[in-house]
Length: 495
Ligand SMILES: [Zn+2]
Image 1: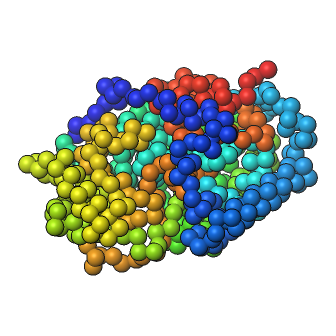
Image 2: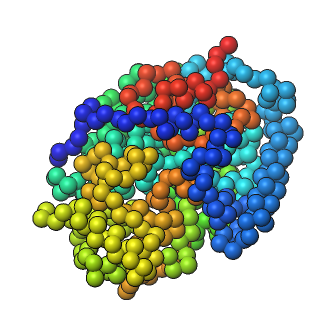
Image 3: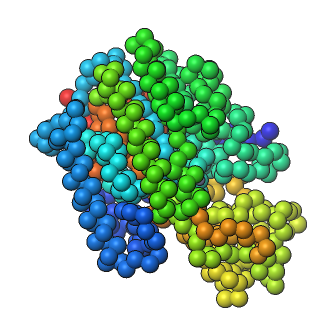
């Protein structure tokens, strides 16, 4: 199968990312992505219908809940945690803390799928808030890459590459040259470009272990996905069993303990799709994730290694409700252009179209936009079609032959369907939208020897995380789209 080797691709400048990363909090407020905020996009402190709350009330509620959460977290820090530190330590700890038990740094990367930024305030979630209070948090969440989908984002987190460069441009897609189909069960190395961090780790002669992560079952370089250190995906494995298996690695002879471990939970993405981000089932799922973190922390403490381990809690993307008849039907474009279903690679929220040869892609874009903006297509004004090379540069979504030539940007919470009769379920949740939307952000909390306690950093894109892990493990990372200065900005130096 033909593929574009990473070596021939020149990653674009990461100026945007660097600017975001290093902007002060006050600059964050004037960030264009923050300008997209509306009251309905702000994190929901408690289950509530997000479309009906007046802005003032919502703001007050959020402010109050954030304050309560912060106060609770601080109380935890001071009084509840067996490993608490004094307030003066929080302020004065400007150097990395030396390892006390482990002979080498260990990074434990935990992903909670679809954990929208703000979910942490839905309940007390003492374990998440313990990590926040004693660690470093992206104050307004982690920015996903576009499209804000599970596979592209998980693989960006571990490679530091935008999807156009790591090759996983959607959860499912067809290679336009070979005609082969990629699915979430495809493990052939030719699909998965770049160098995932577990490969970087084993290339340096260290151990890595994956208890699920998109791409982890792919054999690449010296990463062979051995049964001992790499689990074949099976969504029915109970979450508690996953946590316990990770803890078991800490019982290995001390020099064999993997330097990198990944742990993946499908929740609360699953519930978010079914019921939307404001449903009480999300709160239950988040509370469960918090309990799992409690189990993990307790296991690490029992082994005396919690303070030595770098625990990074994050998610791949957020979630937004898709209620209120926010649907666009492609059939409604018939007076302007017929878009048959076999042109459509994916519908929603990433509308991706490949017209057959003989059709001009730019004419298809023109006709579709003419119809969409005519005022005669229901919700048409909420979709805009682009040739991929004309997409906003900040999306980094054009430099791969795998990306279909025509991409439609669908407004937050809207859905695209082929025809009216196919509309089955109106209300639920979705992600995959523009990564500048606040609702697409996830959580980032890092706790460990090189992370300052109680520090807040501005939001950043998840392509920075690969370099961060490489720095903590003192490894030379592969070329990627992250900025080289990010680790210096975030990590505490050694004294
Ligand atoms: Zn999902």
